[in-house]
Length: 303
Length: 268
Image 1 (cartoon, helix red, strand yellow):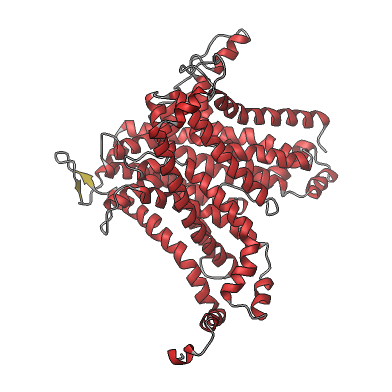
Image 2 (cartoon, chains in turn orange, brown):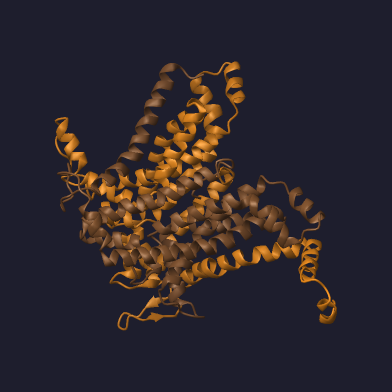
């Protein structure tokens, strides 16, 4: 608008001020400038990455040269649906994720209930931190700890011997995997359930009691429905984290897990990226369906 | 309201859950002081000799340096991008505003192996420019899921701050930069620090996505994982794991104190 000659006579902050005023008059421009970098980053490094992943699922690998063939084909998806091994592994992984989610919900609900509605406020803060720290503390460390506990000469068998029970041998079994998954993801369930329970006004419970409902009826018809979004929010994490893990199975269980098949095909000897990409769409589709269901139950407001 | 028996039962349950959460963590810290190189229970005594061995382990040191660099880069990127997104979403109304939150949380809500393989194929297969695994590919991957951590903390703080503060500042003659420097920044500063600490802790500990973006490089978690898989150098691993627990727990404790008023300190 103004020539450099006029600007030269003005104090240095004048240009800045004009820019500031211009932005103030055009809030949409300011919003756009703020939004562009983060959205651009996510578009390039995440959405584009997912797009490349999906595209490569329809490619194949030349059996002789080991090079990618950029021709559209459904071979990979055929293999996944036809081969009983891959079907079984997918089913096993999803079943494990569901079992872990259920276990964590059952452990977390009474705990969160105590935390939100019975414990005095001072305890509440302490308990919150006691749940939070394990959530953040090293993921590998917590898996490794269980490896040491479940090992043949570990803490578990030592304790069993102390109380006169026979030793168990559950290291590297499905049971071990179930325990460890439930352990590492438990805080992710507790926190949203706690947040949901804490938000229920006492007056709702009192009203239910005044209207003649017993403790159990109040729990079933007032508290549970109001806490459900919290449980669903927590289950998104426990379910998704289990579906996408390959380290826990390889360290404490066995490697018949979706994540391990994907890992072997990308970084292992098999080196078949298109197949890995196709197989990775299985947890992706399962999670997308789950997120849509969760959205309908209002879980996103509870996150 | 609940009967005494119910309250007692729930209290007992809560105690058991806390023990369940903490005993493995305590145990792993005890193992760091195990003098033997056989990892069985009970440990034969207490010793700090493996601390020295771990400190002088060159591979572990290199891995630590790489982890610190990657976490610093990822945290810086997440701070800028997460704060910008939080300001846009809390201060402006636009079409698809809820979609922004959803997009940012996606890398954490989708299975880790999906994010990992997506980045892996993107870096190696995209038609524009292939990126060979480096510090940068690790940091880009980490930043992608750290943005939402900063975003959550800053957005929660901004929602609790009235816009009239910035309006008053502008009315009094401050320009946009001065308003940010003297009004907005002091308000969000502790949320920024908390977000940065959490993002740092998350990046420092991440392993599932990192294995797909690191190539042959070792971050500290990848070094631990490699040794756990092969059953090598377990005494050093014990010490390093102890150190990693401290490195993740400390920032979270500080972040928790900084954001006590906003009361949000969720990983996702």
